[in-house]
Image (cartoon, rainbow, N blue to C red; front, side, top):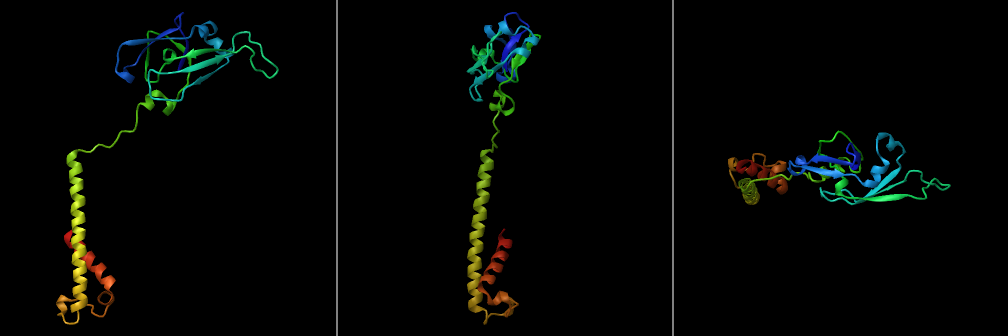
Length: 206
């Protein structure tokens, strides 16, 4: 929020920023002198016409650059309603009250909000936390993947060998060593035979 005035005659207010940077000492902020001459009390805000141009939202707590453009008292306007003697004052971090800071030894302040929600500096300094894993957990996950790959390779080898053996010796093999459905789909189709055998070995090894 841009500070316009406070209960102090010089437009000074004090803030505590321990929620932002951990510092417990109070910092003072001061409104621009030109604005102090225009906004002396709350009623003056009704006739105060201004706009602010400033930098895009960022995470830097103590950096701010902007400009407050306003119409001075008794301004003259053209036929389109545009001020003919518009004035402006520079803005810096000394006029900014950050979200998360606390007002101290100051009854009230007048200001205008420039950053809200996720655009505020405290939110810009709160990125999504990354998921952290220990080295033991990473090593365990790696071994699990290696073990599964090794088991799949064994199942593939056993299934291929079993399918070749069944295709070669099916007619001359005792029934208890061969498929019980000799004339069925499993016995006659090599692909189905391989898939069923692979699923059986996968259940055995895994």
